[in-house]
Length: 418
Image (tube, rainbow, N blue to C red):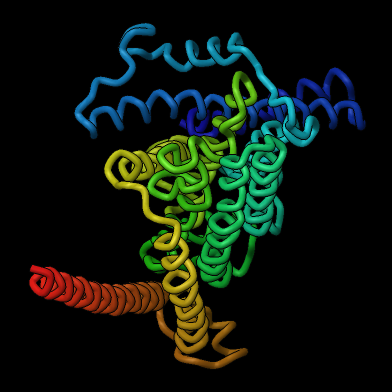
């Protein structure tokens, strides 16, 4: 059973032992191991990209009462390979007035930085590219680099629709990084570390503390992080930066061939990265009973990505003003209030005897602390939704009154004319 549960770790340790046995302890062996690890991470990310493109086509087709891919291989399972062949053989065009270096570098940067997200993700106990003690901060920083690449693509194409998509990138992607970070902070505060390994182990019952996933303790933070992550990746219903009904295709309208393929790969990898990060931060990552740890992470991440597919197949695209209002007038203030609430509750209700002795407060059991925080977070979410619902109803009534007044005015004018 240990062989199955620790399959990935044992395989990595065996490869490393073989390399050290052949080359000895030295910089050459270390470099070779790092190269193999980088190739493995890229293979996992690119394989996930290929599989998710097929899964999303089939699942969204079912949601919208269509068939989906069914020609390339049995049940259309070879469709990702057919797409890759098409992209490799499709004519690669470059606009005559494009900024050559900026235009060509943008797709590469999008794909590279999307892949770098997975270098700090713990896939199983002892299986992580780099266990950074600032892993959570690293994820936010890498996500910001993709925004720069999209700006490069929109500017370098020298196309007004591409430039408009790039401008929307600044408003949308940069804006939604704020609530993502604000809702990551409560997790870091309760864990006491920015290491993703420590965050998972805390949810698994590390050091005798509670063994609950943070989605139970911080439901508001989990919901806000997920919605902000969807907006951060530019997926429907927040795909304003590539809205084909408004700006043709946005920032990537001038790209074709494999450059377009790299941009799409970056988009899917970023979406997969959001699903994986949500699984790590709020669902316990690889922690779980019976099944091997790496299967738990895969199942949780696919479950979250299934929600992304569901939203894409059912919800219409929102307007840019609605998108920005939801961010700056709802998520950011609510996230700040939630962060302050978690700070207060963490100070008042203490589950660690050492912290109680040092800082005081009310000493309670870890489960009781988790339930108090979870109930408070849920109550805050319900209050916020009630306030927003009341405000939206009030605005709709005011708008309806204005329309009624205009209709009566037009009828009076028409009557006076006749």
